[in-house]
Length: 76
Image (cartoon, rainbow, N blue to C red; front, side, top):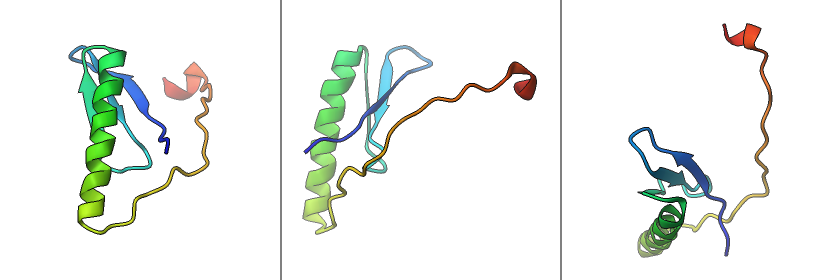
């Protein structure tokens, strides 16, 4: 099973990641590689907790991530 992971630069240094299909599932690390290892562990723990609570395990929805460009004049 695969889940999409969004990775961000952390303000204090390092990186943090979230899993949109698993609300509340986050992790962090000093490098992208460490963050990916940590978020994989977080996903596994999150799914285990859902199983223990007999909750439904969310499946990855078909979605895509896109970017849009906003004119500077709209922001200023």
